[in-house]
Length: 490
Image 1 (cartoon, rainbow, N blue to C red):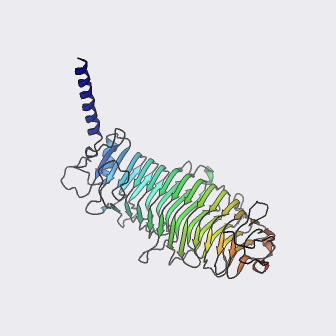
Image 2 (cartoon, one colour):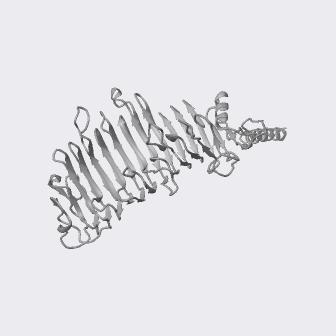
Image 3 (cartoon, rainbow, N blue to C red):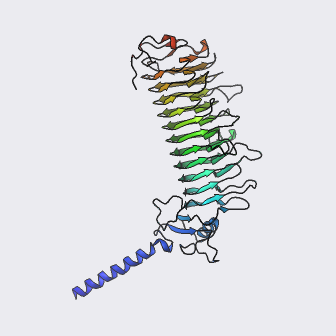
């Protein structure tokens, strides 16, 4: 009897295991009890569609709507390449408002996909109609977009307003077109607009952006003075992406990565390990690989901004690798480290002030850290690889160490200060406790250039200037450069 009971128990276990295996079989559409897989393939013209592997939906929105109607949380919509681009005649191809817990996974990238994969990037193509975008997201939460080729879109290819827990990775994004009213557009726009709106926990990683009008990624806070800091962007990661402009581009992409504060808060922003090249050709604007602008409005604030290990190269002679401008409000804890630039100017920090009205102007960059960057072959003949500018009533302080700035057509470092502004740049041995150890050499106009005597005394001790002898002839202005290094520390 005991043996019979053991055999019966074992048989029961095997049957139960078989049911579990069948329920998780990818051909049935379920990857697990927690996540439903719904398949999409526009080559299905059979007329029978249920979202299964064998009978996929022919449109993406139909798959999304079906999941919503059946109250299925945590749905994965898998989009196969099909036999033509996915497109829409009006509106947005994928229109999500208030949606939660959804993954749109294209067959262009299959690593980790729990179902039966296909091959090739599905193309989500917009038409030329007004306000049409491939993907529109509003007030969504826990949305992931993977492995899609997203093309075109008036204003933006992907619009995400007030998104929380949004991940976009391993996609191709191209062809953003200008709108009649708003002529600055981007491949992906992360937008916080008005009172109480917030974008948070955003990750845009390992994508390719090319030939998008104005920019590749734009993170913008557009609040209202009436609401103070209620409009915000927090915890944003932009990493491992590639940005470029082709010779065949219809429009110039002169700001591959944009962060812009009109009124509100931008906090915990990390931009790292991106490759940016061949941008800005033909632009009437000054191109910048990474552009951060805090506009002249009431109470803008940014803090914990990390820009590191990006490679920016091959732009026009007046371009900037990294441009940080704070026109009003304050920027705290800015760190620019480990970047490599080969552009017109390498890195620019500017606090232009312009405080003509109460509550505006007087922008402050407080205690920025600029360290370990390599700035080579800067093409601008009159300025520098590394620039610090405080104008009108602006205020700028920076700790600068262990950078390599060499082989430029202008100066290595440029300093500019208006009489009512505040500028404190510590290149070594100064009040901000920089260790120095910068290598600044072989720049055609010299190591440090200054706009005029308003720059005032600054410190640049313990640096290598390309020669063991006194480097005084390479340094303009009231700069304390003694002692200097007699050999290159890098």
